[in-house]
Length: 381
Image (cartoon, rainbow, N blue to C red; front, side):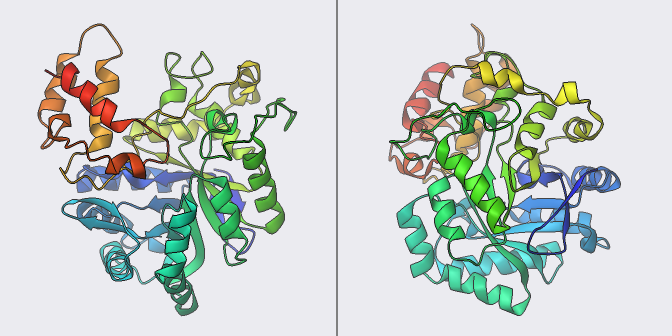
């Protein structure tokens, strides 16, 4: 395992971290097995934004007796309402959810208190106006959180939060597709500048490149989400590069950005965890991602990343799961029966969509969700 030191702290953080999102739905034994294997192989970083009670409790059981061996990114403003994830800026709801996180994890502190998913200027203003930022500051003064951070997909917002001078670490969406795409929550007028940014000759959209450099200079660490583009970069059919990248190549791309400390891979299974761990024994040739330097300009906006930041849905649709089944259903000429069966078993599906558009306002990747819901209704007749 490779470890990287938090610039404004003593923490030595594993370059591979656990993105906890896919622990939802796993049994307590399955979660325990993931943590046993990860920690036995040196993983000491966990991101948990998920507010679902069961997954929080399962993680708490898995960490019991060894809490001090895992650094935790715990998110403020991720709440569980009407049996689904909801991002909120309501101070009382945020306090309740954060207290619940501490209780279920059986801990009295969180290493990195992250203000959750701040992507737009009005949202940042609300974080400041509502008292959320002051609440996070207070938690840090009390020692309930050791370091203050935030998560975002937007480099402009990231720079504004960094400018407060109070941030030690933040979580940001990084992969080679996003970095070459200036339309992905970037300044809409910024042009992609293909200039030599590293030894591979890869160009990076200016605002994103500037964010990484500024973070390095300021001594602020970055943890990475969306490193695999929801798996799209691992598929030759779905990747904008025209060929599949490996998990190792995607990780190496992220870990060679300035200021990056850890790649938080979402782990569905032990096999996926083992695939991530291969990075640390891979050869330089296996890590080489220079193929992306030969790619044309393109965009990955409009592609669902299955992150469910589009929630809450008034019809209680698990939108990410519907989108995933739709993608699987439209790969070939016929819908696989297993996919059809899984879709049919959903408590709510695209047929329950009331076309309100709230999800599209929340989506950080500009997905036309209503259009996709209508398509799913036709595909899964």
